[in-house]
Length: 257
Image (cartoon, helix red, strand yellow):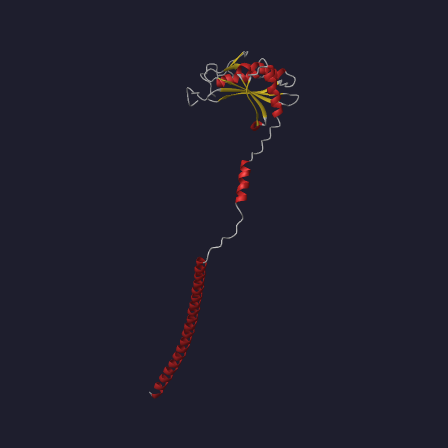
């Protein structure tokens, strides 16, 4: 019985010693953690104090600056620049360079005014969007004579009519004639306008045979009559077709067709 009690006592003492060792290690770890936390708090407090001191110094400097008279910073004088800008705006812009084909247009217009009539041209310009095409807008009564002049005159020599087109501008009809001098390569455009309610112009088919089918197509699709055309009838639509499909006011009998 005594021997058993001794064994139990030894075991208990060992456990107590082991627990005491573990407890000491825990206490040491806790103390180290507390010391680290304390150091961090102290560093944070010192940082806050430093920031507060810097802020106070900044505010004190701002207050001193506010009480002192403001000294304007030196800036470049604006008046000379403003005057220079105003002078530049007032100066006229450089004139636009004339088209390289302006002399060609001027020469053709001069011939028309001299040999046809001084009132034959409504407008003359170089169509820069159309490859600098010299263009004459002519009064309809002079169309045939001007066409003959462009075809036969040696300085114009437009023996080839490249195309004829018609346009419905809703306020009026317009026919455009594109002519070419096959020797020199010079190109011209003639424009003739017609009343929209009863559009009619002289035919240029007697001058250029290639205008025959072009004028028939314009008559067919836009309803423009060409006086003196040798065979003015429809060329695309059936003969009994009602209306002219390219007019802006055209209303088909059957919208689905």
